[in-house]
Image (cartoon, one colour):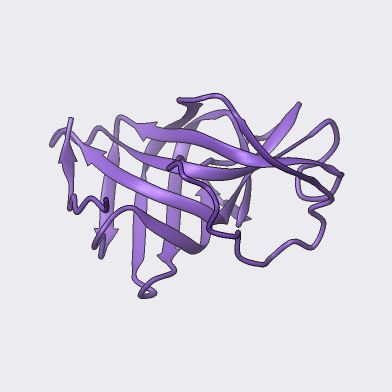
Length: 165
């Protein structure tokens, strides 16, 4: 089954760092799952908790309060940029740049570094069947869970500013 995260329908739960440039981002991601091409071929939509992590990561911008819904986002691996819909799971040794704009106040957070691993922390939770081609509207607020963001692949409110591992 092929999967991709729709960044703008996902929620950023936390950004974590251990102070030695190792860190991760935790998302409750809205995921397209299909036997064909995610975002094009009919399939399923659901929530998947995802954690992109890196051993060489830096964070810039305004984190503000988390969790926060993502209005738009992109992931660049080396010179290849994937806007909004990002396939996963994936592991990269190249440089990366994950850019997120949050819906509540348009603040921007950029996570960048060298080497990125995108892994799932929970099983896919089915929400709806559908044909997602051209989908761009906001996800209804009916999901009681929180999740991860996904990076691209080739073939009560918490207030953490930075959570130490």
